[in-house]
Length: 197
Ligand SMILES: Cc1cc2nc3c(=O)[nH]c(=O)nc-3n(C[C@H](O)[C@H](O)[C@H](O)COP(=O)(O)O)c2cc1C
Image 1 (cartoon, rainbow, N blue to C red):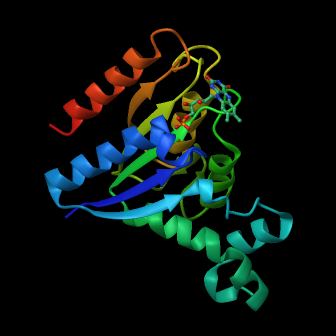
Image 2 (tube, rainbow, N blue to C red; image 1 turned 90 degrees about the horizontal axis):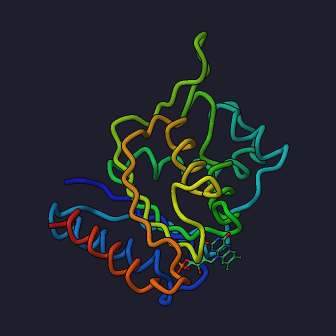
Image 3 (tube, rainbow, N blue to C red; image 1 turned 45 degrees about the vertical axis):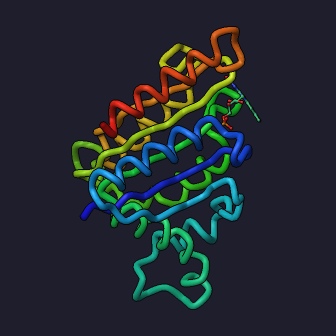
């Protein structure tokens, strides 16, 4: 049985285009493969920004942490364990100001842990989260995904690759505020349909 980690980030709940795409994809993957699903809703806005103390705690090995450090590192431990346990990761996210929502960046700052999710080597950093498949379900009002002004998917794909996750499939409903917005959404749903057929 496969383990799906389903990450959401839109502040628009049931109105969200990225959520609708991601939800349908996850439902289809479950129907296909009998997967278990762990949900992480970043729009709940309950992740802390990294701080000097938390960063130090996150890098301290579990058995040498002080009680304070154990508490500070707990959320990153949980997020990293979610990633490690997943073989399939569905990230549904809007484009906010040409990048990822700040909640997604906060998540990234917590899960990038040297020695655990990546490591430094003589030939540069190497990702340790290998063998995973990621689906990115993206919605944007006007920013074309894959264009020069798309720092969202470009950054997220690079970041995931840095962690060793190189198999990334993008489903984009981009430019949904344009005249052909409904067509863009329909095309993205069609792609989801093909992926879960
Ligand atoms: C704070 C904020 C910033 C946004 N910035 C952009 C942007 O830079 N480019 C863009 O195309 N759309 C932008 N949008 C529009 C959203 O990407 C668009 O509404 C999209 O549908 C949101 O995804 P969702 O439907 O999953 O919530 C922004 C929306 C918000 C709320």
